[in-house]
Image (cartoon, rainbow, N blue to C red; front, side, top):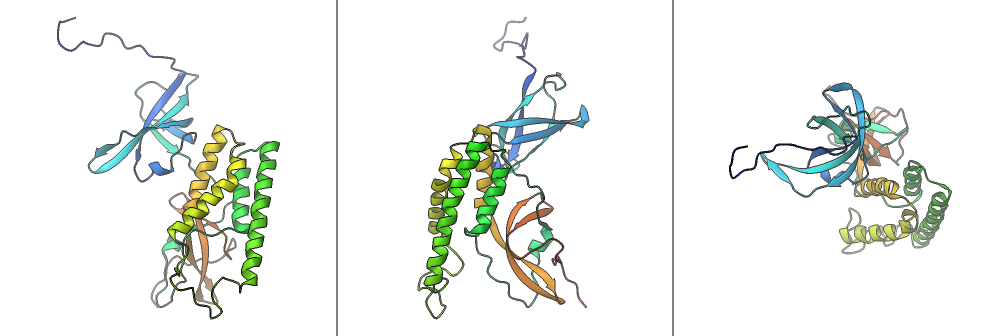
Length: 284
């Protein structure tokens, strides 16, 4: 050992190699969807035909910028009982932020199609409540493997929300159907494209307060999954699809759900499996 200002490394002692971690670099455009507790699947070059699994443990704030690309380190906990994974290996990982089974989906090209000479209806923002919203909440909760107490809490919350939606519907019907003046025009100063940001924020807080009794019954893993799904639902947007009816494009407004980059889930609207959705048009 030579005397110097820098102490050389003589030994590096590893801890229990059956418990390891992966340090992922997540792009800033995707890190907002990552939550602790989400499942992670990954592969390593040493075992290309084997899939490993882990769980998101920590999202660190020490951002790194390389060539104007900002990434954030995300720590994934991995179980390594057979010691197959070795320190220093490169992992190619995928974080599952949402999953859907038996989902109605369309190609992403259908979301970008706009026929020439035809005015599309205003898509607006997130869909409001109603039966469609309650059905979506039930589907999300069904994926959490709820016990009897959790299911009872969910049923109680949904029953209260269903009652409030019905009361609101009856009030709107008694007032003319939409809350607009008799002439059909929107009230002066009211936005025509949908609720304002303040209204959406107020609705979001009311929704969180209504669902709090059910959320409190979830364990840590279930709560992380529920929060991720609620974030996706809050960010959902209304889009216009064009169906081919009698040889002419006909618009239908739906809510776009999760996407895998090629196809997008479609929720609500008058759309059934097998419908002819227009993805492009050519000249005569």
